[in-house]
Image 1 (tube, rainbow over the protein chains, first blue to last red):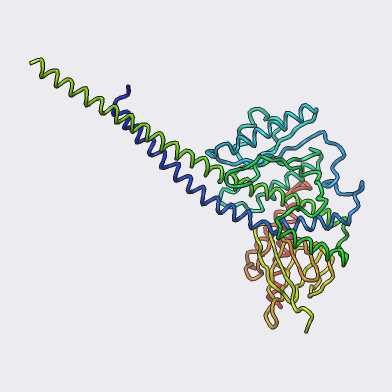
Image 2 (image 1 turned 180 degrees about the vertical axis):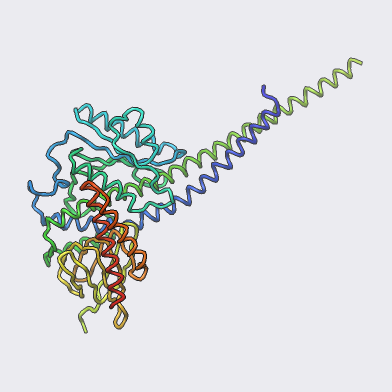
Length: 307
Length: 141
């Protein structure tokens, strides 16, 4: 049985751990609020972009001369997986989940006889996958959003790299894997194909109010046909890379919000566990203390009786 | 007067919504030439080159001048939405800084090798020049 001092030391240590985890929880909560705000603020642009894409798509006839970003290279031999994780740990299964998803995806593609290349955003994903897939790791971006805010320039940096690689024919299909922010309690690892771009057939799904507005706009569009300046094809060619940037930016924002949410939940659990542990330890400590007192009393009494 | 005097003008960047106000007229530097948008403009989608967007919000007020580094405009009869990756109020641009920037980039352009690098620096230089034009234009006007 451990001595009383050992119990005391452990209780002190667990208490200080609890202090840290509860502080981390609060920090994560405030960062989550910020990240969510940012994700919301980026909504209007994404919505407008989606609406524009849909409108342009209506008028464009897809043919062999269409931009490669839209129709692809005609092959699907080389896949590029763009993985978004966080830079820091201590956020529960957040990074583990998406990495597991990537492993599954890689396995599936390998079984189909495809070549897989990797692009990592965030240190955690890179660290895990570098060991087993070092050769197929093209590049990794770290330190994004370290100043508490993700700039569009960060996403643009990634986008430019992807575009460069695509133009030089390094891959045929690009898939984005990231933690989608569903709610504070659930972040779902999800995959989204970026290149070739899957055109929205109808205007993208949105909340009821928004959707109504868009329908109205669409009707107007029917009434007076759109003018394009320059031609539709050309606009489409310019829109596609921008849209790629928007998608990547959105994934980064989602992932950042998800990271904070996951950390908040994880730290909340840790704080609660620390509390339970302290209760347990205190109980054991008191028992040990009482046992010690009883032992001493018995010693004194039996000593007195012996006299 | 039954005809609407204003239309909804929106300027959004990927990071946030920068402006959402009714405007009387907006002048946009389209890729194929500047165009003004008034209420009841025919539906138009246009790409924008780096330049200055002038938003005339109220009568007798000076227009708000915003530099944007390229983007897209989506115009309908009642709405005008500009998608811009980067937007700065022209008043916030600093001429001295920009001149320095242009000089630096011109120097850089002489030094870099390789087509990819060269076109990147060239792009930057063009942007910087457009910015500078935005400022000097506003001074002379």
